[in-house]
Amino acid sequence: MITVGIIANPISGKDIRRLVAHGSVFDNQEKVRIVRRLLVGLAWAGVKRVIFMPDYYAIVQRAHKGIDTPIDIESAPMCAENTQDDSTKAARLMAEAGVSCIFVLGGDGTSRAVAKGKAKIPILPISTGTNNVFPFMIEATIAGLAGGIIASGQISLEDGCFRSPSIEILDEEDSVFDIALVDAAVHTDTFIGSKAIWSLDQVSQIFLTRCRPDSIGLSAIGGQLHTINPEDQQGLHLLLGEGEKRVTAPIAPGLMQTVAVAGEARLQPGDTIFINESPCIIALDGEREVEVRRGKHVSIRFSSDGPLVVDVPKVMTLAQQAKLLVQ
Image 1: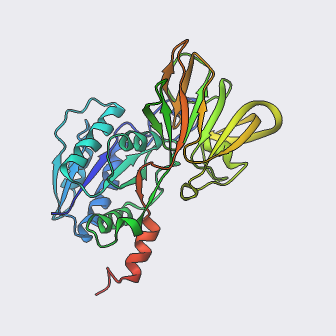
Image 2 (image 1 turned 90 degrees about the vertical axis):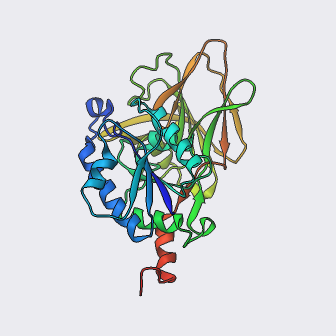
């Protein structure tokens, strides 16, 4: 039986950047409608079973009740605590249950949480967050078709997916204890607070796995200097401070800031940078997550071994060529 997972984060699209910037609220009823269209696409691709992450709003259950579909749904065996750890735990349980693809509704932070727990299962991230650099802005029906085609084996993982790079956070024994999918920033403040970053005043370094001129968030800063795609398997390291360059970029929805860039360097897989600042906070994918206490140090490594991601346009092109939806 072809089985996929769905992780719909009920908290995504609701953080403090609705107050300090101009981010729009992504309500859970809209997520229900997205999952409903996702299920339609999955059914047409031959998927018969969905394992979902439970949540307080019952997003997937509400979506399933609203349509006539041959897909059976069941909850991952867990109790939701309404934290990002729910997504990590759900992804791990789905991988253990043998799902062939995991669909993620959220922003960069949700995708990161899933990548930490999903083993080697391909993921298909759909944008419902604040800074949506990693997830796709895509119609959910198409996402369901593409992910279902991958899950059913009609298109191979080698042909229809790509390996996304990541940023690894290393402790003093060089062990990986956290990751970022898009950006990691060294923040000289020592208070995590509300997590989300909306000011660059205390950011000293930024590490990026991708950047485009039409991006948002911290990657938008690098995007005004270079274009680096995930498939390039390169990264970018920026040192902020007085220098010859001043870059203006949208670091959150409706929030433009200008920052001085003192230096930059391309990153290759395996490149590792020792972080001298101590104490400090390391923000991962736009949210302050790692607290480095005084006297302790971490290193940041660019890795080519990030999550496997479904390449939706490529899958649909291959499906067209193979006449998968033509009788």
